[in-house]
Amino acid sequence: MKQWKVFNQLNKSTRANVITIGVIAIIYVLCQLLIAVGALSNLMQGLLVPLCYYSILAVSLNLTVGILGELSLGHAGFMCIGAFSGAFFSRLTENTITSPWIRFPLAIMIGAIFAALFGGLIGIVVLRLRGDYLAIVTLAFGEIIKNIINVLYIGIDGSGFHFSMKDSLSLGLAKDGDIILNGAKGITGTPNDTTFTIAALFLIVVYLIITNLVNSRSGRAIQAIRDNRIAAESVGIDITKFKILAFTLSAAMAGIAGVLYSHNISTLVATPKNFGYNMSIMILVFVVLGGMGNIRGSIIAAVLLTLLPEYLRFMQDYRMLIYAIVLIVMMIFNWNPACIAWRKNHTIKGTLLSLLKKNRKEA
Amino acid sequence: MAMLSVKNLGISFGGLRAVDSFNITIEKGELYGLIGPNGAGKTTAFNLLTGVYKPDSGVITLDGRNITGLSTIEINKAGIARTFQNIRLFKNMTVLDNVKIGLHNNYKYSTASGILRLPSFFKTEKLMNEKAFDILKVFDLDQEAHYLSANLPYGKQRKLEIARALATNPKMLLLDEPAAGMNPSETEELMKTITLIRKKYDVTILLIEHDMKLVAGICEKIFVLNFGMELANGRPQEVLNNPEVIKAYLGE
Image (tube, one colour):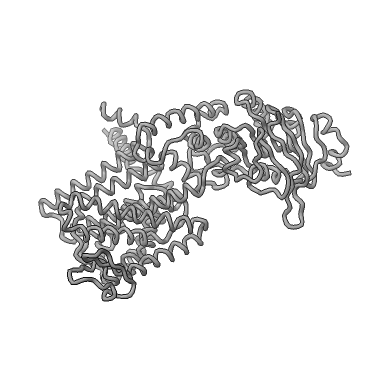
């Protein structure tokens, strides 16, 4: 009981953090137990890491869409930059830094820094726009990033790096040379460093970064811009600075998700499927379903919507049809005022209490 | 020395001269009223003073410093805070957070120390909370500190806007129709609050208002604007009895 009292004394946001991180930790331990006793199918085991990086993507996009209030459709592009820069680093240093415990955190850092760099640069240009116009331009930038990587060739030999945007032959590598990024064939042979443990850990880290940011001075400024730009200006808040800050941070964390992604597969290729427009829209769906500005909701939505298509596999061709219907029903249940009122009257706690009362009366 | 001195301020929108040769001098600690019929250019004058519009001509001097042409953000940092005719609160944030955003430039710690929860975060946040509650108490809003600002009743939303503006620690406060939409008892209370904050925070106030009872009751001087030009300027009784002013308001 005493611990309970301490818990209740924490302020609201800290309590929410403790609950969310606690639930993530419990699910992590449960999954590990299930794997240990062999109760988790291979398919599900393979989904654990994607669940984490999709959640990270959803949480990071929520910073732009929910907290800053600007619609961005290029999030997959930043993930792409993180994935390729991280994988590039790992391929390059595979033989020099042999311990994955040192190499992988460095790769994640480099992925995050590169994504942040591009996020910041693109942000300076595009954040002058608002609403639909911003969405269109970010969408274009996402596609540009993907397409540039598809024609980029980078190799290394004794004399240093070689770049080309034509083909691998024009790199002119020496005999001992190694093509690291091979245009549309991407990066092959990236060490598979991502484990469920690391991915879950980074999900918690990203979650903490965003919630701590939201409940700090800069986070308040970012939310003020979302709620009323003119009023924010009138109290002396530097709109441009905080917009770019939020956008950059959001891109950096998409970069982290990218690195986790690229170190979970053997061949990294930028296709429309993994880094294209569809991916950006899917992340946006996670955010909208989970609730704009609701960080915990983003994680729940990302997990549910990643698992759903897998569980619907037995429906074969009807799978995506059912997925769409479930999505619509969930949206209505989540956001319809009547449904919200119904949920308020039928909380788990309230139902349990009324059941208890009934039992007591009968007794 | 004058707190705010405006010389020959003017702006045109296309062929319309919205504000023309606007001259006003407000001494430190004064409470000045700005009145005029609808469309006279009162809010435009406010927008010029706060940098929302850049003036075509004229010079604005705040406490000896030329602030003509600065951006809204810089003008706020220089010491002018304002409220809006149509309430502009941060609606999805709590009452307390609204005031803390006002404190943004007076209490600083870096984004990194906010994310990493370094000691400077806890220290500064504590000071910010204390200061914010101080201000909220003056406006009798401390009980509602953790409510969403959108859920406050109308009169309290207006008060919160003034509280947020005061939190930026301004030398000069511009209130755009603070009593608009208020009932008589709310207006009465607002008059008391304005008188109180003037003393407590040592702030010079310029307010736009249509409620003549409020204007005549608390303003020391009144400036009447009509078609963007000065119609009268002086002590309330003189100005309000001026036949020109009565003509502008009521017609002939």
